Image (cartoon, rainbow, N blue to C red; front, side, top):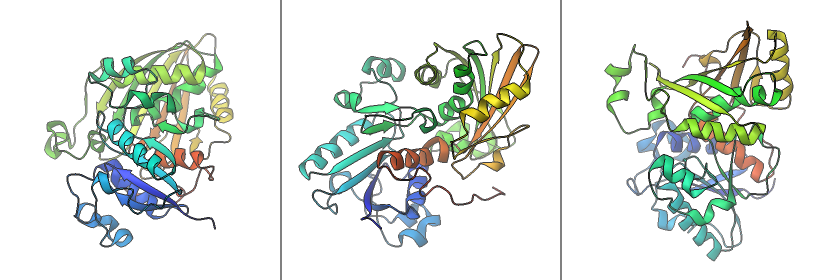
Length: 353
């Protein structure tokens, strides 16, 4: 057994931060040294996440300025950020500067949107805010692990949960060349996708037994999907995206539709996806339609396909907090440290969530 790699989680009190802490508790190589929270410093992790009491006992959240105090000079660090969009980049920059002073070997995976765009202007035009650390953009790349075979970048900006579900469905379709590159996407997300701060749209009486679209054809994740799909497939892509709020806490169900260039059978389409994900441990291509309960609380994506009369539909299900955020981040960090990609991510998920 090699020496554990110390792990730090920035923004550790949100839903994604909590899932990162849960996954790190059972990871064979990453060892949490601190969970960072400015708002809850000094309070125990268990007070915010009672489900983690057995894993972390009396360990408390600490201030960002002290997060590297227990990391030995010259050691290795896995830095995860679950801080919000617009705040994450500056926190990462400060931590990386401190890491340089301690001669640490560091890899970063950011779950916010701050490093999903290679160009500062693209990020700022979509999010309407000044980027917190534009000098670091060249050190990050973005994409789902299944679509990036290798990278020379030391850090990763993990795609959003909607983007992850849609890209896993869309990229093999685009790579095949069998369809047009204009995609029509509907996707339904659980209430945890809105974060831990209560909002009118996530208030239980409003969300329960309800279903509604929001920001149809105007959601800011559509440009992210189009850009990452083009990078992964090499084809200029248009994405028409209609997101929906679903009456459940966790999960995303995405359907991607496109027109075919010629007659295409369901068997042919299924073969495209089976080939694309033959070596992907977290993608299961099935006959029929996927189900949310098959993937919730796991790092799995389940994909099903349909084809008829010149059009295709690809259905993709993921857990928004795991594969779409914390689990995908751990999967990327495993790669960055040349660990088995599945490390810490293979525990069986509950079947009745």
